[in-house]
Amino acid sequence: MKKLLIKNMVCDRCKTLLAQEFAKAGIVITSIKLGEIVYEENADNEEGIIEGILKNNGFELVKDTADMIIENIKIQLINTINNGENDIAGNMSSYLSKQLNKDYSILSKMFSKKEGVTIEKYFIDLKIERAKELIQMNELNFSEIGYALNYRNSSHLASQFKSVTGMSMGAYKKLQQWDRKPLDKIM
Image 1: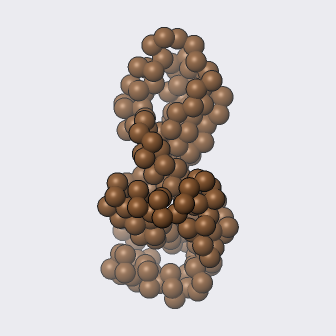
Image 2: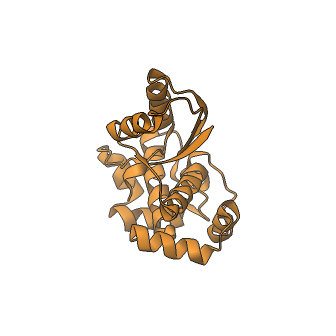
């Protein structure tokens, strides 16, 4: 068995696509989750085939240790937003430290240096993109969206939304020109 970390693999469609491509190539996947594939090693040229599959579909194999850590930070944050998890409620730094078994100051410095933005800013951007998606789906009101994204109150979300997008949530909803970014394109 061999484990791969994959950059930009941030949604269920990514997992489905790669599962299909690996199957076409005759590579047996034993586990697949956001940013990670575990497969059974069979052939000598498998790594070249895998790198070709990844490249042809807009993904990249993560090889550098710092890149692996940064990709894991992104995966942890995306998972909390996609799954509606509120276990990072008051303290993202403690959550990430615990999940990645590293001091948050090291994670923060590494992330900022490599990505050019703080973890906090990245997380806010993720939450705003998720808010845009929830507005577009039109199933929740603004207060419920704020709650779903673990904001203290809906005015805090509204303030951050306007700061990031330049418009209010109501104006965005009325605009109905959905300019959402895929989560893997936020950085």
